[in-house]
Image (cartoon, rainbow, N blue to C red; front, side):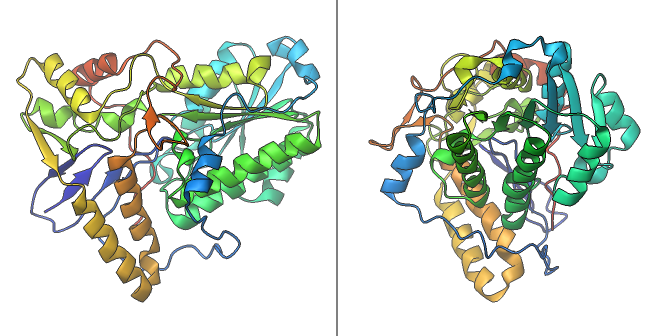
Length: 420
């Protein structure tokens, strides 16, 4: 039997193949598929310099209290006085789920855009150069490796241009321990270093609202990079940042549409009221990120952001879907303890088989997104707040569900997260 989980659901599929599969979604758009466990060694990238952050109430208050009201006085960069056509923007993570829309929006607004891409991008390198050039039409596409600072530096120098702004839409491909530090921290740091060498005075970072409560490795990696951006602005008043922390993406909530359409129940954890969110579309989020390039009111701020309307629980999302289908709601509730048991088993096995480190991390990611809301966290009460979570844009989840019912999930692929 196979078991599929995507933020709000688990559903059994054919017993033909005896595997365990989880589709996990995070706010940096991480969908993770766990297939058969393999003993194949993981990447040799060292973890020694990245010790886990011990979670305490005091530390929770520190992370959760970082809000838009906290900022550093800084002299506005001169590029904000220019027309967009005279502003050079470097985009890393340009072929990702959000990155493609950010490049498109920047081009639409008239900026000079240089987009960094891998020669083989997309799910397991399925997208070639020609397709990438077509997807990023209007931008100057530079094929390079942002995980290697020397290579990346050389690629940018060969372009013969300087930059005003760096926009990072980088996100770990699978949410695993080593990949999180390689992409969410090291590669993103490389883009900061390389961009600064070529004149960039503003950095826009796509982070995630879930870093308020950092229990996962990719959250710790993102927080370390956020902290270094803040320190950079503190020591250099000519440098500024905008840290964007979005709530859930539409695609992370669309995994059950076809199942419900086929007559299956809507599956959720607990009582269906856990893990509420204010989902935002890729287009609306891209627009908000591009707003951060030139807007003075977004300088040196941490910017949590959700989509329009009130927060929605899994129960409400399911009811919305059944209403669109004209069907009587039918739910299946899964005890959250199932995830706790699986995590306990994996944590034990990791002590014997270190190669299962990522599998254990994926279990924790699944548990996190099954129980934690993607909303502003009150550091004093430990409660999530719908009212305090800002809204932006016009696209609604109901419209998204309607479109998926008509057209399917094309363009909402899970991404490069199959690792075993």
